[in-house]
Image (tube, rainbow, N blue to C red):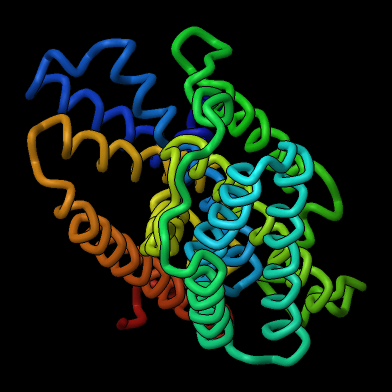
Length: 336
């Protein structure tokens, strides 16, 4: 019973319950949705969101943000797609894409952690550079005529209707979650995001930890770009636009605090599935996909405001408790 109560208090559990409730409500409104095919389609379409959300989770947990993930995804998709189209073998093309993602993450980490530039400003600049590089590399043209085997692999299944991509993403999320929660070095990320000064005192380097977080974020965006290229089958000059907002919204939906130090990649992954579900359900219910960004924005604002209210109340309660301890007055006798 105590274990159940503890699980229900977890932020990830709240997000998971929200996802289940979303499925139930839509199934009641449209019973044809309640099929294994549709449920699997939601999870399969969430793979790209899951990967960029997991990467973004690292940046947010250490107290920063990365708004260049969408352009990183698009640039990697453009490069990898063009390499494969021109006859490059898969491993080499994938390696080039992942190295690009790691390099972007390293540059972001250097600018934010080493040089001390605000993460929003620096990664926004990198976002613009990547978008420009993407246009120059492709000449503004679409990357098409990709190898059929590469495109067909996106529909290959491993567990029933679930694709290989989703199964791999699921295993990756579980592995990273265990790494962050069960290992000493994994907990460094949360420690730095919660209190960078305190982390320094116990021998943890905030600079190194943040750089690593950004490199991981870049690599995840790169992998997402490769899968995006495979699933869509072509890349445009605007591919990846808006994905940074999706990633942030997924993290917030998954219970990650934008102030850092609180949250998990598991929550981010659940939030990503919720975002994918909303996109899929809008189309399924006959609504225009143009509503997607508006709904994402409303959800993001609502959760951030709610989280801010909760944090404010917790701060006030903590302050009253400290004051009561010092003065000997009961907490109820102190006015807010």
